[in-house]
Length: 89
Image (cartoon, rainbow, N blue to C red; front, side, top):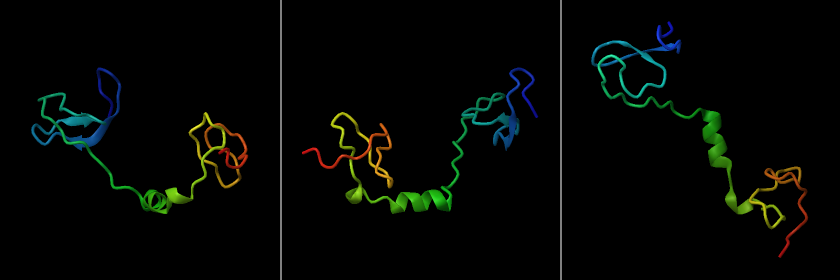
């Protein structure tokens, strides 16, 4: 269903106070003003695994002194794209 005023899709969620159908991402009910809790979905297993596998002690920082990037597995900076030139210290 779409909102007759703005055309935004109305989700499957209903207001716990007045049972009105709510717009997706609403923080308040558009009918009664009830403050809604933010819906948060648990992270998917793949996202959780990616978070756990990051090892900051093994990262290689970009050799360009002006860049804040990290070098990827192919030897290039993920931010500026420059090849790794070794330690610039």
